[in-house]
Amino acid sequence: MNTTPEWLLVESLDLEAQGVAHRSDGKVVFIEGALPFERVTAQVSRQKNNWEQGTVTAIARESAQRVQPGCPHFGLHSGACGGCKMQHLHVAAQVAIKQRVMEDNLWHLGKVKADMILRPIEGPAWGYRYRARLSVRYVRKKGAVLIGFHERKSRYVADMKECPVLPAAVSALLLPLRALIGSLDARETCPQIELACGDAVIALVLRHLEPLNDADLGRLRAFAAEHGALQWWLQPKGPETVHLLDAATQDLNYSLPEFGICMPFKPVDFTQVNPHINRVLVSRALRLLDARKDERVIDWFCGLGNFTLPIATQAREVLGVEGSETLVARSRQNYILNQGAAGSRKALANAEFVARNLFEITPDVLISDGVADKWLIDPPREGAFALVQALADLHQQKVDPDNNPMTQGAQHWHAPKRIVYVSCNPSTLARDAGLLVHRAGYGCSAAGVVNMFPHTAHVESMAVFDLQS
Image (cartoon, rainbow, N blue to C red; front, side):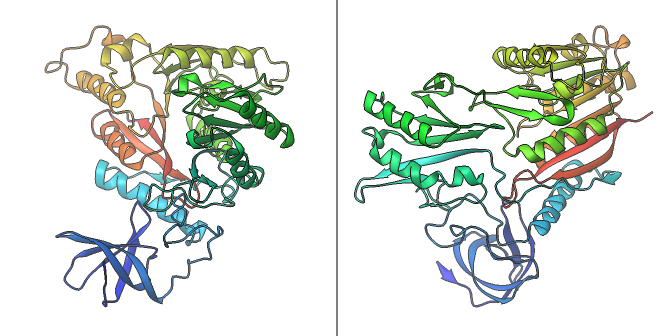
């Protein structure tokens, strides 16, 4: 390592929340802890021919957006928690930077500009993280247990005594959990606790590499009894082995009150980390989709029905498509549960659920699933390339049927007039947007960011695509 004597002007932040500056010779320097428009020096830790990477050592001129981090474990020093990267930046500025990242990706990767930029979706900046995977380590030399996120740029577990991004009730459990794990006979073979909070229940999934004895099971039960609405789930092997320690008195579920919908889930199921933002996200997505009572909608990557069930309160029919038969069965169960719920505010329309390999979608598959007036797409980080490629292929066949023989049945099929795309990765959104706009006949009507993960560099976004006449 070496500390550069040169004062550097920070121009922007990159996707990892590092300040980006240039030396006088034009070489790029990525500086952890530096903010745009600050003048800084940096200690360089990595050097390549075209770039360097380091950590801020001095600031001659601070950004007006620099704030005091809200967590005592945040920092650039050795041992600091690596769970958040942007606590030193005002949360409004974090959102603005994420919006710029989305717009830059759309243009530079997809050559797409949205006709309208949507107002960012924001919510609580603290206590929002209802899902987390906490590492556990028994330090034999100290006779102590550490529970938390990994240290910054390290495989070691941070010495966390609190975590302000977790719900207050969960943050308050960190020290008692350390004492509990330290008391277990199996303390050296429990590497992880996965957290999932429902509307009224906290679920803790204990990963254990060896079977737990009766004494340890008793300690877990006593801990749950002492701390109220808390469930222990055990995971002896892979995710498919997760099971409740004891029968639950309350289901683990989350609700979408605007639509009168409540969905049970297991702690290892995918649900949004931030339920406050999820409710706003679903409401905005459905307003943008604008499904009518005479329309059919397809919800691609439907999961447990987070969007499918609300769509069923508005459309004539909705088809939920997911990658596994197991998840499709769970989605169908949630639909049946809400369809018959006495407290449901809105009747659910006809809904069907099918399993598809969503990463090998072809034009024939699109046609077999039938005509839909509108689509909602909510893929994982990999995006929905195969899906939009198949849509683009069908459009190209219609545009130039002589050079592209029509897929069987394509002459009776038409593309959805509107697509709402919810993304957790701006680069794959931009890639897919490029296909939709330049090869599938769509225009990007609107796009905006969703601050699902405050204080992190994670960018969630939403875009609307309308079929051009």
